[in-house]
Image (tube, rainbow, N blue to C red; front, side, top):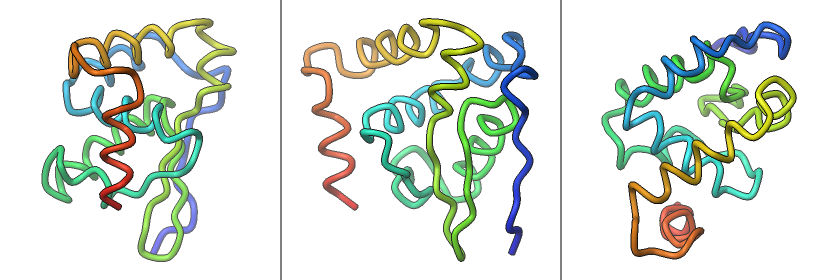
Amino acid sequence: MTDFLPHPATEDLALPAVLTALGDETRLAIIEVLAGSCDRAVTCGQLLQFGSKTAISYHVAKLREAGIIHVRPEGTKRMLTLRREDLEQRFPGFLDSVVASTRASLIPDAQPGMQETAQLAGE
């Protein structure tokens, strides 16, 4: 099992790569879940409502390679967190705008936080 996965340095985060990675509805939904996790790590298994294990692995890799998320191997699990501080440093206000827009499009009538609470409760 791999103990280290490469992540781009903060100064190497490129807006075209970030935008390309976020150009997929599944990846946007993953970002929305991670944003609502209160900075707690989420496992890939908690994202299976968005696709198969193989599909989730693919999407997680794209988000990691773009520098949007941090993936930390822990045994057979992968612990996922947003690189919130890095993205804010590189592109101020960008992540908050993306998350707010995604929430509005995914659950237009729900209050912020309701979807994340329901998803995390199903752990």
